[in-house]
Every structure is written in C-alpha cells, then in structure tokens.
Amino acid sequence: MNTIIYPNGNPILICGPTASGKSALGIEIARKSGGCIINADALQVYDNWRVLTARPSEIDEQTVPHHLYGHVDSSQTYSVGAWLRDVNETLRSIDCRPIILGGTGLYFSALTTGLAEIPETPDRIRNMGNDIRNTSQGTEFIQYLKKHDPETLAKTDTDNPMRLQRAWEVHQSTGRGLASWQKDTPAPLISLTSATPVVLNSDPDWLNARIAGRFTNMVAGGALDECKAAIDIGWEPSLPSSRALGARELIAYLREECTLDEAKESASIATRQFAKRQRSWFRNKMQDWQQVSLDDQTDISDLADRILQRADQS
Image (cartoon, rainbow, N blue to C red; front, side, top):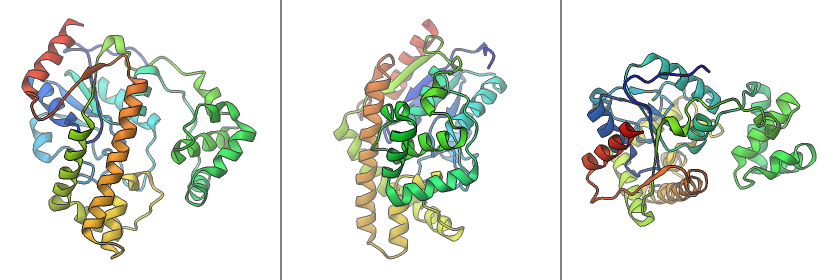
C-alpha cells in the first residue's frame, strides 16, 4: 500500500468500549474540522443492524460524512483484511481529515501495525470450522493446534473460540501457521506517529449504567423489529453478523424462550462482559495511545477542541 497524503489534516483514531460515547465525540471532531467518520466496528459494517449495534442514525450521517457503515450483507463473512482494504480505498477517495472510530481492537491493530496478507479461507473450510466451534466451543481447535501449530496456539486467547477457529482455518487452508504468516506482515497503512490516537478510558460503573440504559432504548427504538427481520430471512447463529450484542437474547424472547425482561438482563450482562474484554484489550495493546476520560460531566465540545489542537500540533 503506497503512502497516503492527508492535505486536510492527519488521521484521528478514536477507540473505546461499547457505549462509551465514541460516536458523539467523533461527530463533534468531524463537525469542527470538516472531517469525516470511518467505521472501525466489526458489527456496524452489517446492513441488517442499525439500532442493535448503535450505528449512527440517518441524522448523524447527514451531519457529517460517514463511511463503511452498513455496507456488508449480513449473510457475508467480513474479515479484518477486507476492512483494511476498504479503509485503504476510502482514505484514497476522500478530501477531508479522516476520523477512524470504533471499538474493534483488531481493526486498529491491523491499521497501525500491519496485517499479514493471508489468502481467504474457502467456504468449505469456514463451514467446517463453524460446525466444530458450535459443537466443541474451541476444544477441538486447541487439540489440533497443539499438534500442528503450537507456535500460534501459544499466542492465541484459548478462551476465545473465534480466535481459535481463525488459527485452525488458516492452517487448514494454507498448510502454514497463522504466526508464521504474521512474521511477514507488511508496513501499516497508518502509523501511530502519523496520526492522533485516542482511547476512551471509561469508568466501569458509569459505562455499565449507560449499557443498561442504552439497551432499553434500543428495544424501544426498533431492535425487536431488526431481530424479527433476521428471523424472517433465516437466522443463522454461526454467521459473524449474528454476534451483534443482544441479538441472541432478543431472538430467544421472540421465540418465547424467555421474557423480555430476562432477555434485556441477559443482553446487558453479555454487553458488560464484552466491554470488560474491550477495556482489557485496550489497556494491554494501546499503551502508546492518548488516554481520555469521558463521563456525564465531560464537555464534548471542549474535549474535541483539545484533541484537534493536539492533532494540529503533531
């Protein structure tokens, strides 16, 4: 990927856990600077979830330009590599300062440290991997990797079945371990030295309260309709798009497997656990990023000004 020139200001990267206020901050920065928002959330790329993934509203999208939201069919598998290619094309097509915003740590890692150019996984192997994950929850992947790719296994979160599946798929597809591929990683699309990287360091109690309140608002705002539509087109739990937080719980309610209150409580718990994993990732992987606290007392306009001032000085 050739070097990209940013005549209207170097990129601003904003990463943070779910419900932490990223979108409001990003829109304010874009509004003040004439910039645009580029999505870095792995679930907001799918076209079937707007409410449930807290994608920017149509009003938000009219306020400042937004890119890479809802552009992937829900039946498709969308990889980190596909996102990086889309970001590359977007950055080369815009004429404003990019504000890359989201909560998917792997996206930002690939963006700022590079991503190995691994061949796409064939559908046959992907489907086999889905079946194994659904039946073994990762244990079969671990046994395989112990025998065939211990180097990758040593670097993989064994509590995360999706990461284990990815490692298994790469070895099955290419005959070469994921760790081996990663040693040939090319230069990053955006280096941290050429951007202003910000990670929102939110207080857990404040964040948990926002998660509970936001999910209630989602249900009132149309999340159930989105889940009904997902059932109508053939709900497939193994699809990446089906990992939208709250989707499984609300679909269980629609199938009369639980009450709405039980679904809301289960979804809130799952979202809090997800946000905790996000915070742990950011803490371990983003130590070089500017840490920003955001709560109900934060003046978003003032915070946006301060981030822009730092960006213009870099």
